[in-house]
Length: 444
Ligand SMILES: Cc1ncc(COP(=O)(O)O)c(C=O)c1O
View 1 (tube, rainbow, N blue to C red):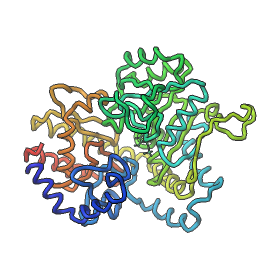
View 2 (spheres, rainbow, N blue to C red):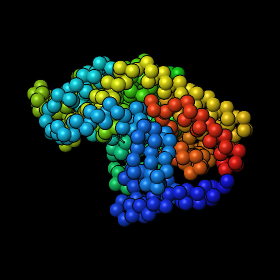
View 3 (cartoon, rainbow, N blue to C red):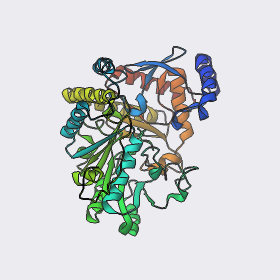
View 4 (cartoon, rainbow, N blue to C red):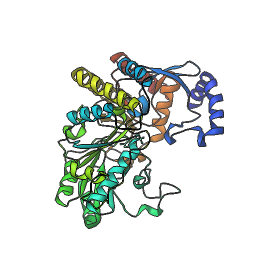
């Protein structure tokens, strides 16, 4: 089956989605509310989701590996969360005041991640990373922020730099001209990173890094990379920020920092911590977070003014987060061993299928996360975002689109997949068989 046939097939099966997408274009620039949600010829339109499934308006049912931007570790609308939410919505959706649920969620997070000495709740991950950077600048009274080439920390303006290949040109209109206070460093290349950092260390406020490069392609860190950055930070009084918005509660219930034996000054959480509702959290050392305390008079009323915002710590998100973390905590052995074993099985078997068919592919990932990279003459290894960008992304898009169109398996084209507690070996075997059939039908 050719890609044209796949598109024809997709269009035949998603007529209502097509009509709604044309309507969507009248309201939203590009017809979408998040840049990455568009894919050609048009994205299907979802009407409902439960467990591991998404159902579109034409009643196609997809096994979902996008899982709400990788946030839904327990699947769509898990029963314990839905039941608690239906009670909570009758009991207030936005108090706009201090509330006990937010204290309970903070207490739960701190118990699981003791390095969260203090926390501030916000509504998106983008805000959390923006506040983390602002706190770091406040704590050091320095301006330069080091980030990873290809690192994604949301749409906050300070970190919208070196996100898209070739990682050198301005990320877009409306940003500060060439973001002169950002220093971009290459993931997994410690020597070059340290050299670049060394050049700016006098002015360097912080280094922000995702433990796993997620949005850039699902790349794990080399042995000493994260430790090396942390060591440099400690030695030079630079704030070390770990962006755990994807990895927090996914790689382990205690976060990637525990797994990689790291000691971040600040770290950010989001996604899973909100149990399927909007959240962002900046956490970390008391002495740094306390710079945002509006009642602290020792600073001559000069505080680091970070938000929260109208919807921060709303009782609905707090309830969903609490119920999700409660479930993860009470069932941590079965949840994490299940999703991590399925992840390992997926990576191993996918690699085997591509190898057996002489397809030049590298599977990356860790725990319940994985992605496929089609290698070529220029790219033989996947160690950083440049490797991902120079690999054959068109083949990856075709592969993911073939899964959607022909096999009703959903990955957001080119993005990594996430396994939830709802997935089973039967689902993974279906993914493996579908992959085999796609390779054999010479679509790629
Ligand atoms: C590592 C990381 N940080 C921050 C963000 C931004 O979070 P949000 O989309 O909730 O603003 C994301 C989103 O995917 C992310 O992957």
